[in-house]
Image (cartoon, rainbow, N blue to C red; front, side, top):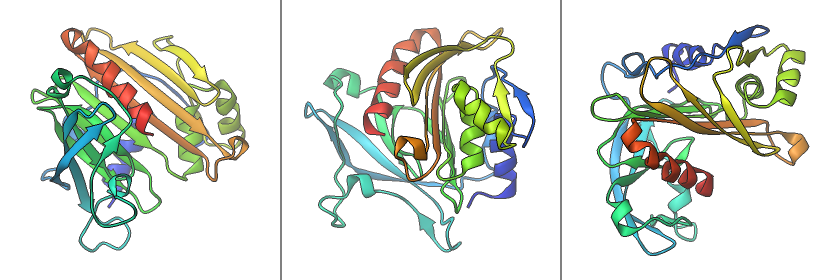
Length: 256
């Protein structure tokens, strides 16, 4: 389950402090801190997923210690259940060529869902709390490239605080509610507004060759949502792998 150490790591990544304004820093994930002394998750191979152009991709599901009752392991394969049966077969409305597909695998992460991941990469950490707040870090074998994903679930303060970095209207809401905010004081972020609820962003980590690209979502009751929710995916890649970001991010927004 999402223990206190993990929560400290998770909240520290965005400078979370109720009522305060934190300054955004462009940094590479601290993979040593995020990695538990021994794996907290298990990976199980599923039948290969089928994309909308009938290309298949190797598929896995991550199971974590049950965050709801501390018994056994929890995994979420609902997105791949066939007609509400126990049979699992993943089908996704996304297209990549058969040649491209050989570079990737799909992993179903608890509280997050399906993610397209470079084939040789590993799950460093994936966890979810009883409220549904979920976070995952995946990395290359050399741990010099990474994907980080966050889903605030129904945690209003978590959502508003994290979204304040990307959505000015949410920043005001977050401060008004004493949830704090994050500011890009040093103008490191390049943000493109896709619509009211979604932005694309990128930044260059100082003195580091890898560039980061990402997508951030925010929606609340005013958008017709049942809950206030924030989701973010960030992909940090070497210059020679920058083209991977397009498929990783496009797959994520096509399936979430």
